[in-house]
Length: 238
Image 1 (cartoon, one colour):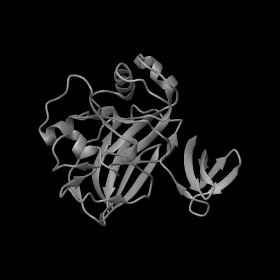
Image 2 (image 1 turned 180 degrees about the vertical axis):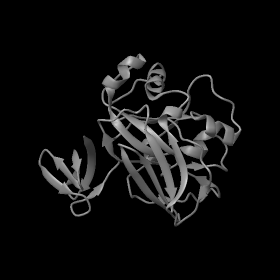
Image 3 (image 1 turned 45 degrees about the horizontal axis):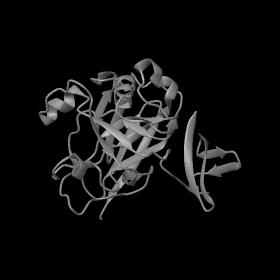
Image 4 (image 1 turned 120 degrees about the horizontal axis):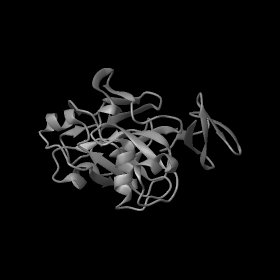
């Protein structure tokens, strides 16, 4: 099942997404005619794991981490599917990262990896937008618009062996499989839950494969995870 959120004239609605229609408790809403898609959840935080693919570490000359290496984006980073990404005026080196992300379904803390499937609502896609020329992860990754998320939450998918690819203006830039992760999704969620109390809607992203390039205003970024969907956003002038 795909769960989507839509912004209508009367406010947000949530329901099952089928062929461009959101089936909510109070009726059916057509995407585009009755409203636009919102980020598919309302997180208190987005917990993002980096350096989780060996190819990325090789590309960036990072040491292989001995445990998940993470940072946090605030909710103000969120953008929805097909919402424009403003190019930050303080950066001259903007890049992207196509990541699978879990959406937490219930309040939880200190999980075992075996418990993780029971607390995850489903999976979606995060674009970890990164201003590479800024100092420190918070400055690079936590600014407004640095977290496009969507287009929906897929509730029926195995996160451990999903093929993905990222296209920039129809040019293939990333291609990998989640089986290549150094730390698997269940392991990552359990690890972070030892340190944080998750709340419904919180997001855990699992890192990006090797990322070969930057983007500029006018570029369209399409990130696809098989069985989940495609997240599409266009970079625009600030």
